[in-house]
Length: 191
Ligand code: ACO
Image 1 (cartoon, rainbow, N blue to C red):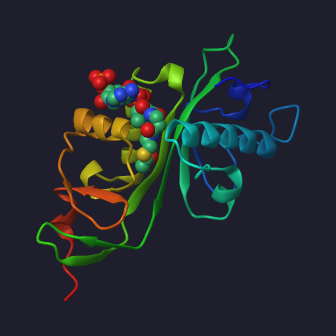
Image 2: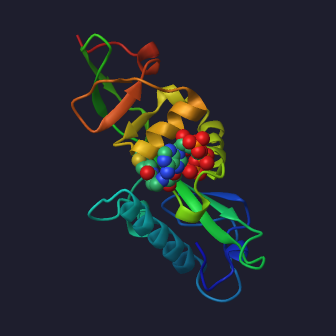
């Protein structure tokens, strides 16, 4: 996604880890308020993600990020757009208290790291960017993919998890979350 300002000046790293402070590691990018520009990038990507998933409204915006403890990994490609860079996509994660059902149908109270939103711009999908972003998050959070909970994963995301991480059959739940075999390795059922 292109913007009328320099993405490379705004986001020095290829992957920026953003939280409620909306700061990407550089104090000022010259012209404009960096926080307002970062907010604009997040808002535009959030809208595009909602559209791609046919959601009635975005679940990711700068305002929502500022009022939560979520983390958003934002990936750029610094070479595109004549060297000004483009925003490629984002991955948003956060901890949530969940009641889940284990393989035997027993209730388990957990607070796992959840994948809440994930989006790569349409023209750059299926080029490996999603995997790059996801792998970065796994290393940054020191977590295995089967220990995450996935909030309403789309068919494309399920295909992605199967292809790259061999995550197939989900353990049936009564909420929108999907977890896979291996998730309940270290959890105990609620007595
Ligand atoms: N149809 C089916 N599978 C797809 C598609 C597609 N159009 N696009 C990606 N995939 C899956 C496939 O397994 C694909 O492998 P293949 O091309 O060999 O079939 C694999 O992902 C490609 O891996 P990457 O290139 O690393 O993934 P990509 O950069 O495309 O990112 C993502 C994956 C984020 C799911 C992207 O396709 C996307 O943004 N989709 C639209 C939004 C979306 O559905 N987001 C997930 C929402 S659910 C949630 O966030 C909890």
